[in-house]
Image (cartoon, rainbow, N blue to C red; front, side, top):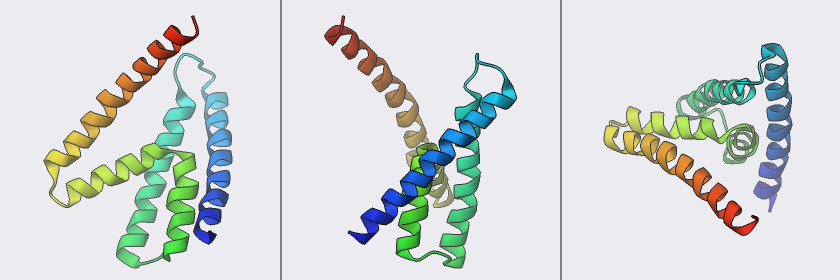
Length: 127
C-alpha cells in the first residue's frame, strides 16, 4: 500500500508540473497553431528521465520506493513519452535494434490508429 501512495503522490506532482510547464510554453510561444506545450513537456521529460535513469542505473542513486515515486509517479504523470524514449534507448543500448524500431513503429502507428478508432467509435455512439 505504501508504494501505491508514493506513486499517487508523485502522480499528483507530475500532473501539476505538466499543467504549469505546458501552460508556460504556450504562453511564451503565443502560437495556438502548434502544440508547443506538449512538445516542451515531452522533451523536458525525456531530458530529465535520461539524467535520472543514468543516476539510477549507473550510480544506484534511487531506492525501489524512490524509483516508484519519481519514475512511475512524477515522470509518468508528467509525460509517458519520456518512458517510451527511455525504454527505446535501453533497447538500443542493449543492441536490440529491431525491437527498438518495432517499439517506435508500434507506438506511432498503433497510437495514431487508436486515436482514430476512438474518435470513429465515439462518432458512432454519440451522433
